[in-house]
Amino acid sequence: MTASGSPATPNWAWRATRKTAILKPDMIIAILGRQPELGLAELESRFGAEHVTPLSPHAAQVDVEADNVPAHLLGSAVKLARPLASLPTTDWQKVLDHCRTLLPKVAADLPDGKFKLGLSAYDLNVSLKTMQRSGLELKKAIKQSGRSVRIVPNTALELNSAQILHNQLTTDLGCELIIIGTGTTTHLAQTYHVQDIDDYARRDFGRPKRDAFVGMLPPKLAQTMLNLAQVSPGQRVLDAFCGTGVVLQEAALMGCDLYGTDLSERMIDYTRTNLDWLEKTYHIEATADLVADDARTATWQPPIDAAVSESYLGRPMTTLPLRNKLEPIMQECDDIARDFLVNLRKQIKPGTRLCLAVPSWAQAKGFISLPVVDDLEKIGYNRISFKHTRQQTLRYHRSDQIVARELLVLTAKE
Image (cartoon, rainbow, N blue to C red; front, side, top):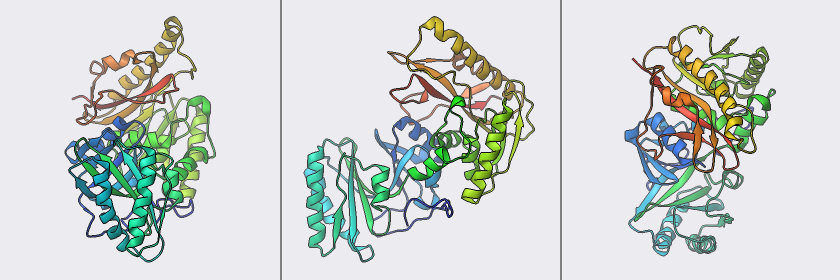
């Protein structure tokens, strides 16, 4: 089974395809995305801090069975893998020697046919040239065991999602061997799921209605935000700034009830059209209560079990303006976010969890946050502290962007 599915027959009910005597079914290893802090916070929110153990800057162990992990619903975990072995060394040659013995056993347990092998190394002191040479050595060891094998060539130390999907490394005749350095230990794992980049692109660029002016919230980030808010199937999720409906479409794929408002009637029409498209494309229920209303003054119909939204981010920027030019932009964004949070707090029960993306602006050293970030307790919210993230503040940001999304993960105070 591949990690991808056609739009006509999407595979939203993921199931394990392989179990061998070598694999450990009681835990998984997650390879985190471009911003690992978001991935750790998402895993902690979804599975509980006690079940998550950071292994390295790019990997974490999650102590749950693979069958219980909805892999396609994790926005910030690029790959999921089953552990194969832990070695008390980070010496590459010793690791390679172990792999020479391990991989023929993995290959022998698979169906007949040409075995496809790819290698990815994380947080290890190894050169690309050494990695490429090691792949050829492992190919030789596997062939000597009597198995036909093809090695996926490395152009970087880590294979990307496209390479894994194109070479079918998560099928019954494939294997991506992940090699993770964690100080004095090396962990070996076999990838069983990789993010389906084509499916994300379909839900982003393939929707009938898009609008660059109101922002382009990536579906992966919407998934992460919903997981940070700890939504679950059957809960009624409010997006008070629904725009073209990205948060609501991802909430529908998680089995939630949908409630959206937006100041613009046009955006409500866009969301309705996109949700209709989602229903037909993915064969799921995506009916939503949609109302044109101002999030600062709206009266929402209960219940609201969770709230996930992206507030107004201001206009796009290619350079950071002078402070006197930035301040009125910040003030407008702050007023909208603050008024929304005050209005929402009056209408939700204590303990209700929410994730709100607000803007912050990159400067030479650090970021400039909205003033409301320092006033959250005053207006009735507790900000969630995460055990495993090295940063209290979670931001979604690319190096070439001036405006970042700062994620506020909150609960309503008693």
